[in-house]
Length: 158
Length: 104
Image 1 (tube, rainbow over the protein chains, first blue to last red):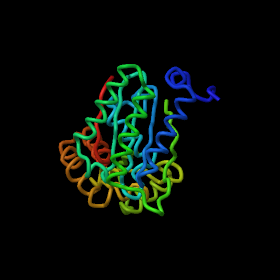
Image 2 (cartoon, chains in turn cyan, red):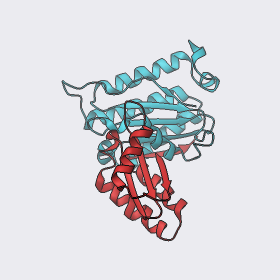
Image 3 (cartoon, each protein chain N blue to C red):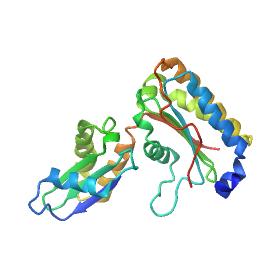
Image 4 (cartoon, chains in turn brown, yellow):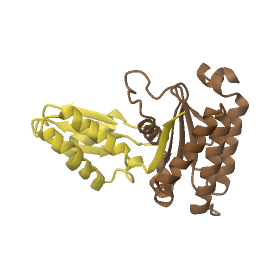
């Protein structure tokens, strides 16, 4: 199974790690109508077409590419990591951003950075997903008719 | 996001040409229609932003007009075309909520 993932991803995540992150996304979304996705790639810049080295700019591109702005409540949250650049970003769509504000994202980021520096990539991602899930559940609780609008698995880039 | 620059409209209407281009190129992710096309016609000094269905709630007509007016037009008037296009791309992506980034 591991063979289908690129080498840089296999060096950071076992299949069990990826499954655990997907499970954390599923759990986090259980209490909310909003959507969370995790995208991990090797580096922020890639080839001639992807030149930015700014993780926030890149995360916004990924956000759009994963169609995350199309959720009903505009409350999608993307957790983005570029492994070899050791850069990360968290992007929340305008629905959730209007509720939580800038300081919230900074806090989530700081706690992620702390865990990443301790070498706990899986823990950092799952921690952020759970934390964001709790906030989303508060502002966008799950209704009876809610559907899971986006996949829960980790999106692996290059 | 695709940016297309043409020397002239050659007598056609701005809307017709840009919609046709957006359809022909199938900009955006398949099945999602989240593309953005910025078309520039140099001779007529005309610009248009064509937005796929998926991005319409993000880049509304009002937002498109504001991006052209505030990001692109002032730089193009100074013939700073690359700077105008960069500013347009930034303005499009900046429409998505908020967040934080960093290194570890």
